[in-house]
Amino acid sequence: MLRLVAANSAWLTAERLVRALLGLLVGAWGARYLGPANYGTLAYVLSYVALFLPFATLSADAIVVRNIAQQPHDAPRTLGSMLALRVAFGLLVWLLAIGGMAAFSRDRELTALVAIVGGTLLFQAGDVVDLWLQSQTQSRRTVIAKLVATLATAGLRIALILAEAPLVAFAAAVLVEAALTAGTLALTYRRFRTDHPWGATLKDSKTLLAEAWPFVLSGCAVMLYMRIDQVMIKQMLGTHELGIYAAATTLSNFWQMVPTVLSISLAPFLARQRLEDFARYERSVVLIFRAFFFAGVLIALFTIVTAQWVVPALFGQAYASAAGVLALHVTSNVFCFLGIAHSLWLVNERRFAVRLWGTLAAGVAVVAINVTLLPVLGVFGACVAAIVSQAIAALLINVVLDRRGLKLQIEAITFIKA
Image (cartoon, rainbow, N blue to C red; front, side, top):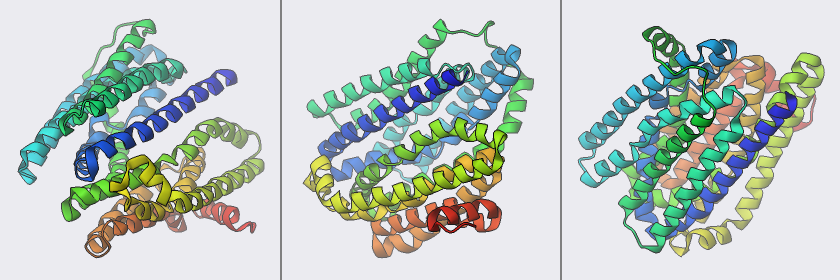
């Protein structure tokens, strides 16, 4: 079993690495072709649509996987009910996204782009197959299916750049990737089916909805503090400035792959160690906090030193001003890395409310700081908001809600035993 879990983690790690690298390289090439204004428009549409994502997916992945693991004979009903819910809510929020953009922007081009990109909300229903495969420790099948879609779409985006396609074609490529992913997952399911056909029931749907709403709230909070900055920059500063900011954050967020991948591999190890020896488990948590925090510091320093060469090399001279933005924004990764490590602790301690309240507080901080600083500092104000919000979610919220976790974090950072 342990070997199977390790293989599962390896496949997930490989997928994240490939997707991150392709996203950075092909994305930078696309940004160079589109220019800051068009790239900013696309970034705005993607961020706007992402705000609706928690409602489309119901953020119930863990619930579905748990239910299948505990009651495997009910898997067809659980999967069928979740599929029906995601199709219904995906359609609803897609229409709401289009209606909201049409009502508030009165920009037909933006509304059309939202209609296209928003179609991805419907195809999120296809990920229900992924949940079935996760519950059976068959992530290899999911990874292969998603990588096929990712590679095909990367090829499409390159073709669009070479063909000098308009902005709307790049928006369509986002939809094509979602559709291909859903299609490849459907084909994968045909080779690894449940014992009986799926079927939705009203009782199971109500139960899933009743359990899912706290996760939807948490997902909304996460999306708020991760995406609302780009929506606000477009509204307050314009698409050109958003294009510059989006280029910088693409490079800054690329590094978040490092702790994310490591946490996948470390999670089973920590879970076992907590059961076997709690004192050793806490020492391991301190070491992980320390490694993640100082990895964030080193990566931030490296990025600050190299930003003035890396940004023009990848994105072109039109984005040269993004180097300064990147140098400031990347410091938020120090707290982001620590926050990802802290999530490992929270999962093992079953302190899920800490993460919920932390993300809610961070979301409020992002909005408040951006409203205050964007008119004064421009996109650098958004960088300050990112740093403060990550510090709140990863560290400062623990002053109130997770004193033991805070002590372990302080011990990790200062090398002074709490």
